[in-house]
Length: 260
Image (cartoon, rainbow, N blue to C red; front, side, top):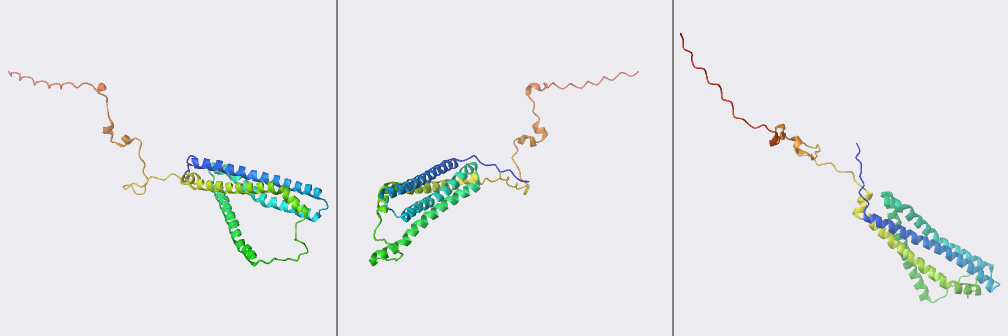
């Protein structure tokens, strides 16, 4: 025999986590839109500068277009994956799905690991930069390409797109930090005890065993008078009782008759 599991009412923590998760999805959609707009803008600037300067090496134009696409994919693909992840799990979390809650925990942990990896990667590359600065020697790589100075095409292109690109990268950084903070807040709210009871409800507990009856469960009867003796349950209103009368005296014995 299986016992029905009764889910408690949805706590306020779950409702707040649901709306915060939708807010994170909205920010991620904004990052995706900004990335697409930046890629289109940069590609158009490449074409304008190439036509303005004239006599540009086609290889430089091709490389700039390829780097633009790679940057858009590098930012856009993880953003789209995280956006879909949080969007798909938002409604099941509100309905009480424990599996969806676990997926939200995974999303939060993945963002923390990615942030830690980026910070640690920067610290690992820092000694190499200081070593190169202390040596004071120029590193010469003979790959057939002259790096003595940028071409007029590169200089003009970067001067035209520097402001827009700077605003884009600052916005993406702020949005990424905001999404990380929101996701960690959602994880904290879903891990609180009221939310945990909502996602992992337990069946009702049986009554403890009675000392005299052993392991048999006992219950509190709502009508204890039903278990009293029958004589104790007989009640009558005073108006329905017959009045008590004096006892009738016994008849006197007849006197003895004279005998003839």
